[in-house]
Image (tube, rainbow over all chains, first blue to last red; front, side):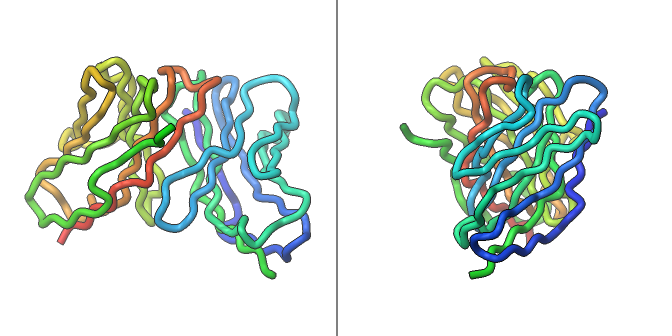
Length: 113
Length: 115
């Protein structure tokens, strides 16, 4: 079985400050990990993925994520937050790369001007 | 390149009715997955179709069904609607049935409201 936890429902950060959105996972095998972002009344937009290889993954819009196998975490980071980054962020995991993603509950990011 | 298109965007039905939602994937994409998004349960996987065959299925009752056509367009059907079926239904497409190197691209969803 696989599961994803996003421990923070809400994250507030000042514009220009670094941001981190946390995600931990549980899978019985090698995880395929993803981050998606959702803006109001829209679908999900793909940000980045970890399949294998370097633990630091770079994605769209300046986002990156660090895969930590020992802590079973895949936190999303950005060095300098923009007001336009305010949205709902979802971490997801799949087993063996299948298309049935298991999503976390989402973290609402608010960047304060 | 056009994105994933879902129709209609909004739908209002009453309990006991049935509904069909449509999804046109990105051109060339052969895998279509469906998800249900609700405030209480979050995002849940419904099923995936690839080359007109259901490849994976989530934990939903048989009232939820789907199909895929030869042009990769997909429909999902919900029969005997219940109040709890009110949700945003999202469709996602990808090039292959194995998503490891091909991320899923999502449509903007169909918001279904049950009265």
